[in-house]
Amino acid sequence: MEEVGTGLLDRLDAMQRVAASAPGGPLLIVAGPGTGKTRTLTHRIAYLCAELNVFPETCLAITFTRRAAEELRHRLDGLLGPVAEDVTVGTFHSLGLTILRENAEAAGLPPDFRIADDADRTTARAEAGDDEGTYTALLRKQHLVDLDELLTLPVELLRGDRKLVQRYRERWRWIFVDEYQDVDAVQYDLLRLLSPADGNLCAIGDPDQAIYSFRGADVGYFLRFSEDFTDARLVRLNRNYRSSAPILAAAVQAIAPSSLVRGRRLDPARLDPEAPLVGRYPAASVADEADFVVRTIDELVGGLSHRSLDSGRIDGRGSNVSFSDIAVLYRTDAQAAPILDALARANIPVQKRSHDRLRDRPGVSAIARELRHADGLDGGLPARVRLVGQVLADRFATPTLDSTGSVRPEDVRTAVDLLTPLARRCGDDLPLFLSQLATGAEVDALDPRAEAVTLLTLHAAKGLEFPVVFLVGCEDGLLPLRWPGSTPDEDDVAEERRLFFVGLTRAQDRLYVSHAARRTRHGSERDCRPSPFLDVIDPGLFERLGGEEPARPKNRQLRLM
Ligand code: ATP
Ligand code: MG
Image 1 (tube, rainbow, N blue to C red):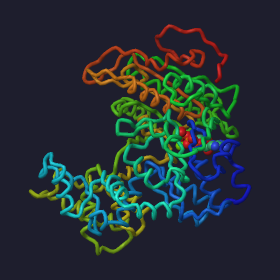
Image 2: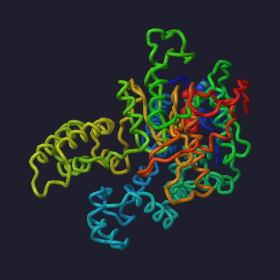
Image 3: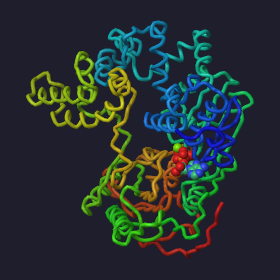
Image 4: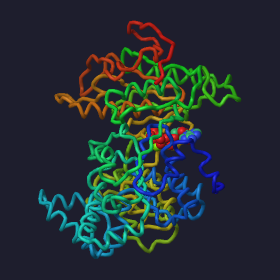
């Protein structure tokens, strides 16, 4: 546990300190990428508890993904010690589940209700057709709730019961929401019920990183915070600790045409005059682009023998870069294959992450079902998962007519491996394990310590940082993404530009952007133009790395914000 007291805020800069130590009442922290949002949020909770005698059990911190919740919990433990356990930390879905568990009867649910899995849903859907009222009734008959209902049911319940609202408001007097730019309508409704208009609601986020409107998120809630909450205090964090000055300058210029933050500023905390420019590679083809990535990684990591041991930063070829420092980002999953192939041919270790949900993997549902039915099994959870996996693998090895669809023994074995980390985290708590699976626990394929290059979609890269980033496929049609026959409207393009901004701002020391002159999409090969998003960036911030484009005059003088 860290020293509490004045020391607690010592690790923050002046504006982070203002945000962390602001008095109660509605507080909106508008903070760009790399400005230390998580650091500020955790320090605020710690400060309130340690300095202002706020009881940890009156604090509720909400994030969007389980991964982010775990990170928050971990950092709070470090700052507050054991009392951090009393802070409620969770996702919107887990919050909804808590409220329903505590009020099952009032919500019209049996006490032993559980969350429907995909098989449950498919069966109910097949029987009910388009009739929603029946669909729900079918689920209820089996004591099931749909995932969406984890949010809609608590909202209905609270809307009809002022006393219950009051009880929750007394319990969670301090509410913190990370990534507030990503709330959707029902999450927003839930928050408004839990927090009075003059409540201690602290929302933090960056409207310019709002990239989830396709699944219902609405950045409008962020923008109207001060209309929704009385006398809201606004704090801006502008100091970026992550990226070198040229990378940051390029990112700020890239977002400018669509920025939702009035007077968007990001000041580099890092002012290394030797920082390399943004590398730009105009590739002839997709294969050429993949070769460029491999070649550059080889150059950066290759000179292992002349690695400088005393320099903590990347300062030139072959110095101090390891595979785990490197990420390759792309807009669509389909772009990963040629890069993966090229890396594999060059024997470069790689790990790929997508936004996979565990429960979507073959074999996972079967294991979950079996665990549910085999309540009496002994062992900690990981051992039980292994045991059930063995039983199922044997069962599926001899296919019978009623064996579960297309699940193969090897799927079950892979599923056991995928489920083991989650099982470990849940200890003995089977209901917790099952509810985490149902509420979208993700495949834990990304190991930050793995000695491998990381491949990610731009969406999956949100919140992460890497010393070296390749942003491939910076082409019109991919960034902004366009489907054949569809014309994106202004809002779509703005969101794509924000996605581009998220990508650029993942880089700490070196950033490479590339685009191919020809690419096969939707079955046919076509000519591609570079992304128009590149045009708004000062050419002087790029270093052109070969390729066939006419050379532009190089201007080494940086124009910083
Ligand atoms: P994003 O919007 O991309 O999620 P963020 O605002 O959450 O970014 P963090 O990941 O919390 O940013 O911080 C970015 C980096 O800056 C981290 O490596 C963090 O340790 C560092 N950092 C944040 N605040 C400070 C500070 N006051 N002094 C030194 N380093 C800091
Ligand atoms: Mg973050």
